[in-house]
Length: 154
Length: 154
DNA sequence: CTTGAACCTATAGTTACTGTAGCTCTTATG
DNA sequence: CATAAGAGCTACAGTAACTATAGGTTCAAG
Ligand SMILES: [Zn+2]
Ligand SMILES: [Zn+2]
Ligand SMILES: [Zn+2]
Ligand SMILES: [Zn+2]
Image (cartoon, rainbow over all chains, first blue to last red; front, side):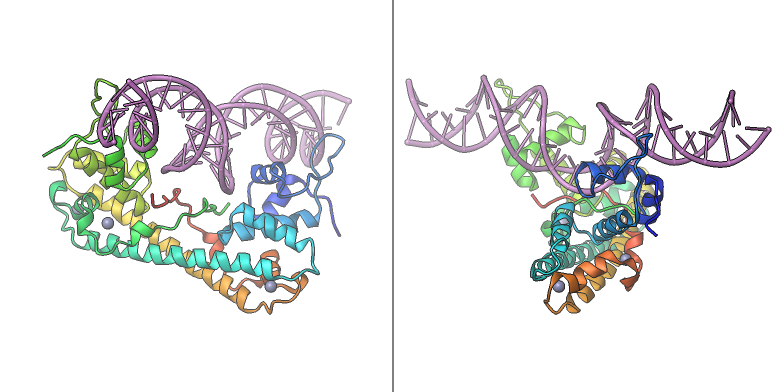
């Protein structure tokens, strides 16, 4: 066990790009691994574990800073988990806000598309609604949640 | 009508930052307005209209490139609106995908928080679930929609 | 006429990566 | 053992859509 892995292997195992692994090393999200005589990185299973944790949290929408906090928490397993739970709860709040916002936006888009009869641009509801705020059904888009850049599934 | 407006006024009217207005001019989303003898930009109502259109579309999640396309469409009002409708429909699809994805993520977060009894970090479900992919209820986060950077409400 | 807010340009920083150029290393095949 | 493909290396630039800062100028109120 704990077989040697190339960067390509860990990236594949963790479901991200090779550059992303190097990037995470560069910004200190993962430790710098040992190298071969030819200067190539060698990883073991623990790197896959750490990367999986990071990617997983990113996919859940956690910003890297929150993940950093979670990692530092998990380095002290006998502490109270209140902080970890707090981070998760904050994230849940954020996700709920985004869902609310997107549902309102969907309503606007559906309404806009539904009312368009496929005529000329000058009569197109899509453009009309986008031009005129007063035609909106809701104001939900004004409360669009500021969020970190979401990840693309590698 | 068509009173002279400073950049601060149009930014306020459009609900964005002054720098954002200048940025939009720089990248060609809005035309460069005339200037005063002291080199300050002077706008009229049409600038507010254009900016409102852009901000509105951004708040709906349209990327700037799609908005550029919509603007160029609206410059030719006698064309068919099929292209505009297509952009809106694509955007609706994207919004639906994001909602699906976020609802799945919310499920994971809620489950994770619910199962945590507030003990020590080593038993914390939050960290455990993030570490172990097999504990996930769904795989929805693997299909996280790639999307443009969402705007923050100015 | 003075002050302070608002404006100007230019540039750097943000987030979380992704892509490219121009190398070197490893590994498989002949 | 030679060679060539593929993977790895560093370093840097680019992406999206802004946001912030520095250092200077202009405008409007008092
Ligand atoms: Zn239409
Ligand atoms: Zn609106
Ligand atoms: Zn816990
Ligand atoms: Zn999972």
